[in-house]
Length: 79
Length: 223
Image (cartoon, rainbow over all chains, first blue to last red):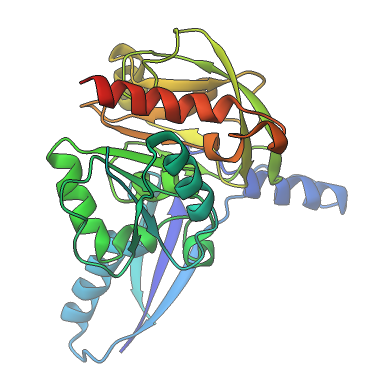
């Protein structure tokens, strides 16, 4: 079963990379971009076929390694 | 004084750290590989060196923080062992939960590499007691992700408990409160972005780092 873990910086955590992208968009003439936040997506291909168990396993992986819970939040999506 | 240095795939300051510790203690540190599952008996200080462990993949220090040796390092910290994490080592200690907060991409988005003036923010630790509080020292910095942040509660605790070890003079990376290095709550774990081990010989352009290691050794020898 394939799942996606979407990882984003928590609100309020400054994202210097997102800010740089926002500036670059402005330079290219894209007006009105009030904010850019950059996150990451991790695709998992699990042997587990039960959806609930797969989501549970992906969440455990997220909290143990994939996500820094101090600054990031995540959500798991079945792909 | 017995010391050890942990090497991960991608560590590149492990040798500098070994040289610095050997010069200060007169004894070569034990080299520990990240896959080892025990630390040497009777070790007083374990250093987690700088570099790019696991290619900085996922997040700096994230994968190294889950290496087999890290369970032992956490137990060592719980026993009150001294741990020194420099640069990537600081990132690893934070990812392992041995120190609070997070190290983000530098505010200027650039890798910074230069000698950096620092203020010794507390002399109340084995690492800094050879200094006077407020003293200026210059160590090398070389990092892309050294922008320290923490939530308000952690920030208040760090300052209230006098756990900020070093601050930058002229903030190079956007770190909250100019923080360059912090101590654990038992003051036995120090994580810092600047590299004292890289400026520990006049021929390298500076010798402030040797005072750091001699101070640390002297303090421990006198206990």
